Image 1 (cartoon, rainbow, N blue to C red):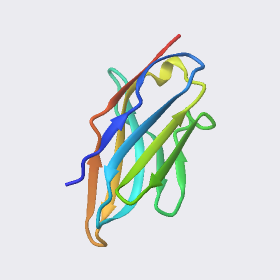
Image 2: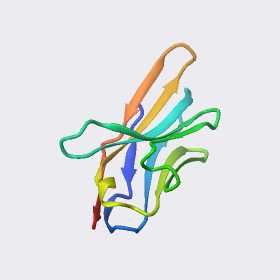
Image 3: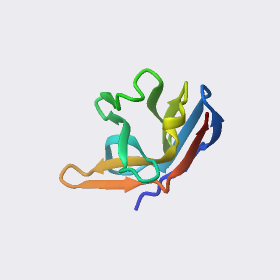
Length: 121
């Protein structure tokens, strides 16, 4: 079982920046992709950014040019980041980290507990 630990959310003024982190232990399984999703009150969860094992990134149109997803690795853990710049009021939501691992045959999907991002106008 892989646990994702998110951090970095908070309250920020419009135009400001935040960096979200999602830490998880190294696994014998390979990483297929990592991503960030968000869910605002009364709305469905939506993809914000995704990074595949091949290095391909996908961003929601609403965050292109403002958000950047990346991943770092050391001997013990992996950390997925979401750098968020030029934040807008409409970026307010709970942000969830998603990690997909694979053993070559089976896909394993993991989610973080969510971190609140609130942007004041």
